[in-house]
Length: 114
Image 1 (cartoon, rainbow, N blue to C red):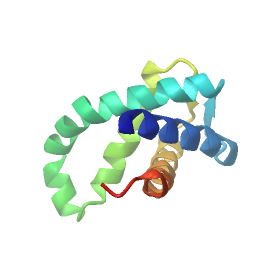
Image 2: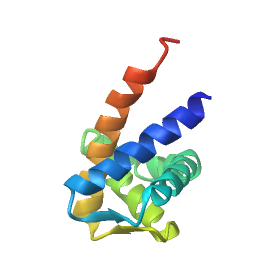
Image 3: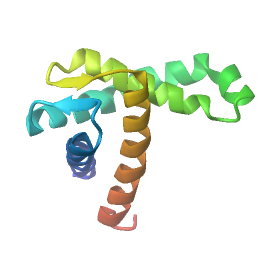
Image 4: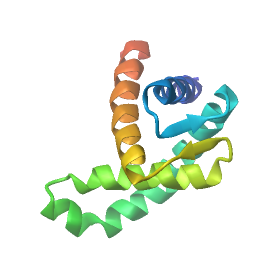
């Protein structure tokens, strides 16, 4: 149940962020739901590999390279989700930062304290 709530929160936040950010677009809410599922799968399988490969750069930049990894994950999700369009790396970077901040705030509101 917690997974479904997190996916829905991510989909809602991503869909609402497209109204604010001019560089990211969804064709509908179902596209945002598909994006949330793809994003969770990419975070499960691809993100650990990218973090391991980017570990030296993450250490040198004091963790800021993680933002680049998040943007790359968004661009990969854009490649797999047909109903999503990201206009460039900067749009993906801003979208990933706002998505992670707003999603964590929204998830903390819906968490049951476990």
